[in-house]
Amino acid sequence: MRYTDMLGIARSRDAVRVGTTMMLMAVMAVSVVSGHDYGDALSKSILFFEGQRSGKLPPSQRMTWRKDSGLRDGFEIGVDLVGGYYDAGDNVKFNFPMAWSTTMLAWGVSEFRRRMGPDLPHALDAIRWATDYFLKATSVPGIVFAQVGEPYGDHNCWQRPEDMDTPRTPYAVSAQFPGSEVSAEIAAALAAASLAFRPVDPHYSALLLSRAKEVFKFADKYQGSYNDHLGRWVCPFYCDFSGYEDELIWAASWLYRATKARKYWNYVAANIDNLEHYELKTIYSLSSNGGSFAEFGWDTKHAGISVLASKTVMKNSHYSDIFVLNADKFVCSVLPESPTKYVNYSPGGLLVKPGGSNLQHATALSFLLIVYARYMDRANRVIQCGDVKATPARLIQVAKGQVDYILGSNPLNMSYMVGYGRKFPQRFHHRGSSLPSLDQHPQLIGCKDGTLYFESSSPNPNLLTGAIVGGPDIQDQYNDSRVDIAHSEPTTYINAPLVGVLAFFKGQIEP
Ligand SMILES: *[C@@H]1O[C@H](CO)[C@@H](O)[C@H](O)[C@H]1NC(C)=O
Ligand SMILES: *[C@@H]1O[C@H](CO)[C@@H](O)[C@H](O)[C@H]1NC(C)=O
Image (cartoon, rainbow, N blue to C red):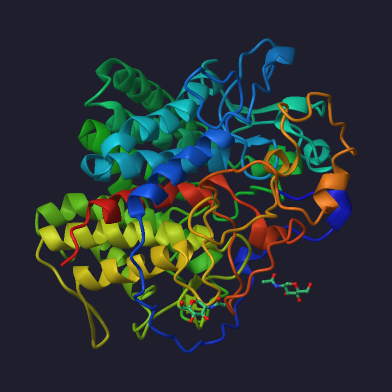
């Protein structure tokens, strides 16, 4: 997140929906000089989450330059909100994107568990670090905590999490001041995590599921957006741009998968038309072809719902079902050769969408491509995008192109994952990584005392292993500069979807 007083530019994520005139770029095939160590990248992508931990660190902490922090979060109002993850390069706990990242980690584990090998326990730890916190954030009936940390105070300082002395204000939604997007996304995360834990810790899994049901009920009964009363603090950072209907349906889809209770499927089926109407006709009305199906991220769940729900209907050969049709449209809006493609590709082959932190799109859309390819494969299906045929193998190949690009198969030969490969980002926008660690510098570094380090041209002293930065621009260029937030800031929601993708490729037997 921004170091606002130094930069006064509008947050890039605000601009995500703005770009309408798209340049059609010539698409080059991604070079196949891969030979990447997906196992190494997988381990590192999970390790990153240890660097984002808030709270009391356990003896098993492997990223040891990080220390305890935020140990009194929530105490000012008598609630224990210790734990969870710092969002990105800042020290705020934004529960809306944190919950989506958790849902994606859990989806990755439940889909690719058997391919994770020795990384499975670490992946489960990464999920549990969030779900333990979400159990706290939903422990007071009738209230769901939406955020901890006053964002303007935080962003005005360049400070280690261990030193934070800015207001750690907790923000909540309630029946009177609802926030269905943040509540429903937390419900989705808890339900998805219950599936991830089911084979290894049935007790914890049951606890997560029962809380997921309660939180969903609350989110659905008291409908509204947290923008309306928390807008001053959640916007412009994680404003809910696309409405809360998608999170409600997404949460119900996860509850259906976790419980198989008909009422959740009925909820999904009954509300999907509204979502189509609302999202595709209202939110994306700017777009020239009537809306994009290639939307999936912390704010918009549309394509994710289509793919998730398609598994259920495809099993019964209901290929004309709306979820399958929409998942097919999603594929056709992503594949480079598709006549209805609705994303751009850089000359080097990177998927690019408008706005900052672009690699969030490359990772999230690659995840969906792989998951859907597997469902298609099981159902023996091939999709037609106009007169272009899309096989499951092609979907996987496109996702592999994105992963390989991120890991270094690109015009700069640059890995965008910190600590992976020979050349990777050194000056990325991250407070903890760029300031000397407590081991090196035990004295407090005050709010403005960090400026020196922020402005320094030296590499970050602490290796935030596995962090994936926002990524290069549409010309495949990258500046490696702390000031260049839109390109150099790592976030939890860039990494989270890639964990499952890397597990898939690690376990893939090359032909
Ligand atoms: C990237 O690697 C290729 C193959 O080794 C090489 O030909 C090319 O010059 C390198 N590009 C850069 C920018 O280092
Ligand atoms: C890199 O910095 C230059 C000069 O400040 C700027 O013009 C360019 O847009 C930046 N490129 C990227 C990829 O951010």
